[in-house]
Amino acid sequence: MDQQLAGKTAVVTGSSSGIGKGIAEAFARAGANVVLNGFGDAGAIETLRSGLERQFGVKAIYHGADMAKPAEITAMVAEAAKAFGQVDILVNNAGIQHVAPVDEFPPEKWDAIIAVNLSSAFHATRAALPGMKRAKWGRVINIASAHGLVASPFKCAYVAAKHGIVGFTKTVALEVAELGITANSICPGFVRTPLVDKQIDDLARANGISPERAAKELILAPQPTKQFVKVDEIAAMALYLASPAAASINGAAISVDGGWTAR
Image (tube, rainbow, N blue to C red; front, side, top):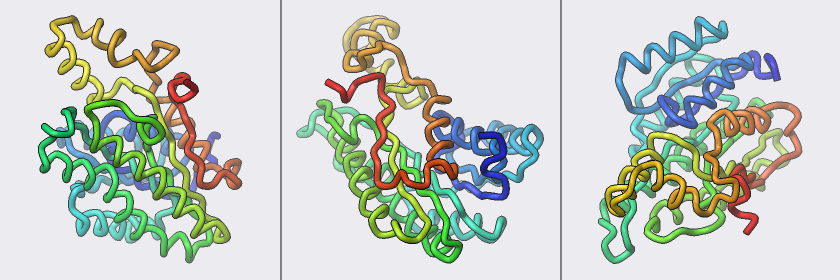
């Protein structure tokens, strides 16, 4: 995969940490210019941005668009196109979580999760597709989840959003199938990210057990390998989907979940 993306530009939402950061690093390693996005410490984000440029010899910029705000998402894609001439690869990765029974689920949490985890993908894709169509080449890669294919209790908004991402991806794939553009979703199982760390801590407190037990006995219960999926495994799949070798993969929901959805 070395330098297979040379000259391409990738926008990766939610790339200041976790899965998005891993994908951004993999794309830069493969020669792509990268647009970073996400919240976090400004110094850490600048260290990441400058490190990508220094280590891989690419250009990297940061845009702080809030994924709950459509106008900021549109502006981010426009700025990426202005800076690099074109957005070739869009990775919709940003996500948030809240866990509660449906009848106790705060409506504002529902709205926020749907906005960030689902609607942001629509707004970013809508903004990026015209340029991809003009170029007759593009890759839309949506980070869904095993929860885009199956459900778990107490995660109604997240499960609804991720099922929506899988469906949205299929629709985009059908619309652009003859235009040199593909759209696919990756459905990871549990990956050890800050989002999952918070769930582990919450479960440990609620059940009066150690975080280690909460991780193994509760979080990883549906994952047959009993191992967390690694960030670099998701990044490798995204890199493959962005590469020329994946030109005929379109509309797929690819599980990287340790066998979770094989049950």
